Image (tube, rainbow, N blue to C red; front, side, top):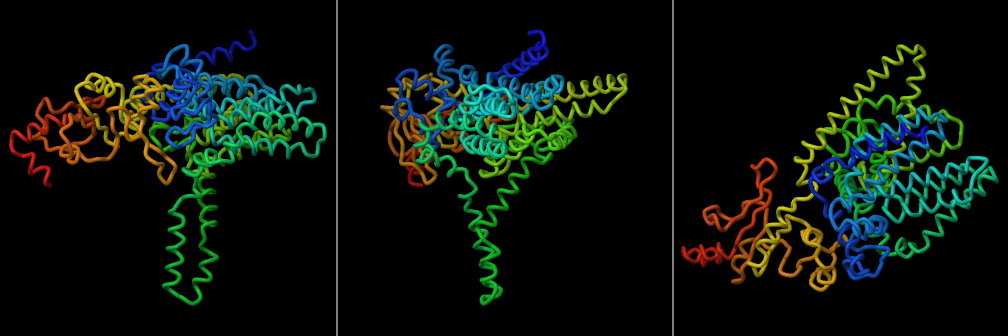
Length: 567
């Protein structure tokens, strides 16, 4: 225990930065997080998901067919703590700690140095990318914990003395990661193929890899119908670059210009030069390389604001030179275990590249590998300093810079980003639910504009709506061309894009209209017609609740209703 005391201290600090103000930063749950939580809640209460499927291995949800790993992982926590943001995020928080532990031991395996391993753990504990993933209920963070565990046990293939149980466990963990997040289906499979390729000439080691494959395939068999069916391909089809209509439009445009310039010769040449597959290769290559370049990792970061504080990249910029040093260090090591980690480094961005530009959720497998590279780089740098006094001064200076840089990030994340990005996380919060609950009995219909997507899941999650009632009262349209299906009604709540004018004039029901912009003329909205929810600053309106029944009465009293409804 004593020899792991430094690691334990790092883990305690890592846990602190992952749970401190967890309810305030991020300020809200995404609709995907609420969907995960409510489906777990539905399983607890009824043994069925929101669609009425009994203990499914694929959750249709919004039509995105979520994998089962995270949903089932939340069940123990929701059962004990109830359906809330903290119980929903606990698997991700724990996963963030597990990832640090495995990264520590992997670094120790390939470097043979516990101090290098401790540097890796320290960097990962205070890493913006890891902190953000761990503070949200991301399926990818749990999948990453399983995947990095699989990597750790897979490394025992290269050891003379190893346990078959460890090898099978490696395969099981790879398989579980594929059950948890879609990107790891590809990442785990290619990692296993790489492991086999590295050992194909060594019969003893190759036999060991068969045990890894056994664990992987045995557990994956129940998932095969889902992998090969609609559910397995739905999410990939929704996000894949192969369905990017812009590429096809670009090819047609290029060929049309060729025809207009010279209709006899150029079209034949351009048909070869300008084609869909060439542009696809270019796009995937650009996406892939962008993920590995320092500009994304250390300078720009993910551009989706719900995934990243836009003022910071995925790693603190002070680690940029050590990333490059560590990459060189790993590439020049001759051990096959190092080649395997290097191979995983190049495999990890592929799933993200097939879906679009770099994104920290789809490419999360890269996170611990880059951190390991930084750990190797930092250790190699300090090894170059021979004079102990200079080394001590350098360590203190580097530590001070690190503390300053991290504190700047953490304060921004906790108090600036959390307020500024709340609408990017989700445009509605608990204040909306509280107001609707207080007014629900006063109205026949509550119509929520589709400016607020999937508001039904906010109501279901926040109000802990009985799953049986939910299934009996939810109304869904047929799926759209992407496979998504968004409810249009839940009890007296309706959701859609009907404009206020039609709602005002279509019937005499008492209707509460929930929107976000100034849709009705201000002179119609006297005090008891309108309720507003402002943002954190108290200046900008986030939600408007308009009592259309009282607006209709006002217009009728002032002889404006008939003229308004004729427009």
